[in-house]
Image 1: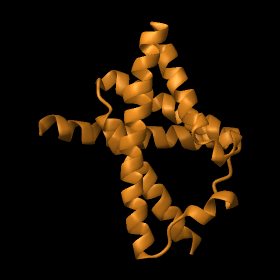
Image 2: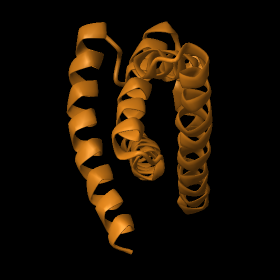
Image 3: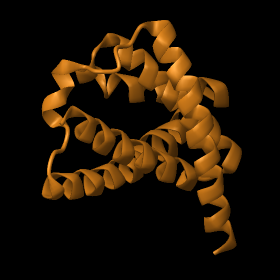
Image 4: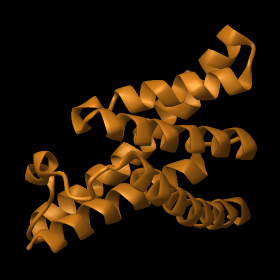
Length: 148
């Protein structure tokens, strides 16, 4: 239980620090906060918000398992380099989000690199899963509510 609580605290700190860094990077990359092409997927109404949160939790768990838990370890074995594995995993993570546009691929790839550093430092994907689920849940719900 102590490790879970520690990971929740680490996830919260990571979420805050990465949020600040991503805000600055988004400004530098001139990524528009409102992306009309993405608004159709945002939730509205209680049922959609509930489903969105469930989906966000699932995405956080699955994406961290795949990109940091599996791919990053495989790339480390392949390249014999932890930094190279982080970059390759982050590039794959960014590319998986290509539907959001090129600048978002760069931004999400950088976010993936931050998650990779966190997973390597902690020796676990659990803090990343928690932070990822928080980010996706809150981002979608707040964006959906702001739209109305």
